[in-house]
Length: 422
Image: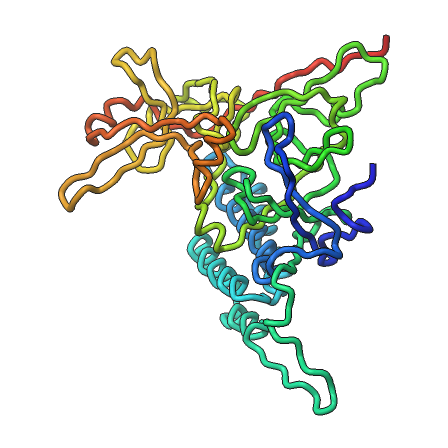
């Protein structure tokens, strides 16, 4: 089946244009938000919202976070040096060679330079003028006089306001393509107005992916389950046992399984670009927890049974709780007991709110809560569960309820029968 979202298979790295359109209904499985596109010849996204440098900077932030994680206890020296080398090579060879095209791009480049210095404690480059030089080269700051006998330059007012492009990071698949997220959004990682870079390769467990369901289904975003294996997508035609693909709705975190025969293809989402103004409106996505092959000393295991803290914790995850870390902090996931015995407990995020200069109240909240304009109403209309907070508590009350701090997730890849020929 031809990829209907990409005319002539134009790769994103060649500045593929993309666009959005409206669908009348949600997918019949009611779980995933539609990603809607039309052909390149039609209108696309706002020009100022998809500066190519934004995707480059987001990849830089990802590498920066990996470099930070490489300094965690137990990480070997080779891993640490490789992470630092990848970050430095990418910044020197890609990021600092990219000229921002818009005000948003200039702003994000300056912010990233500051973030780099704060995390690495060294400047992003030995050339202290490199960032200012890139910003100075931006077309936003330049004015080109037309030749005396030539055509007038195109003014910003003459540019189609809905035209846009997206650029994927270095090393992406040559047939990568871009899609826009529709008005309903695709969860906290992909709010309305975001763009995604998709690679036509199978995802890995815990990846986000775009699914195309048979026959000729529209693309929809899903979060891949731990049990997924690419071989499941190609069951033997005579098989009596058909793999079930574990999928999570990226909006609600609801877990389900799809017959592999109903999936035409499943493509990995390589990167997500969220314009600054969208991020300001809908907030930042929560960070991922570290994955462990086994539980560290001092930790207990807690099997997650709901989507209360999706997307950080998903149903079926094995959360690792360090019972030696119980000091109350704001914005941290803790295993909290709801009765003195601890038989009823759940994982919640602790938050505080200052009432006046002398007093502060605390609450225990779900991470999976609607964020941004219109998201609560959309969740309610779709019949999604709205998880409730608990509180208010005094600091002493909430401290007494803490069993331990959630530090990560233990890897636990499930198994699914593939089946054989009759």
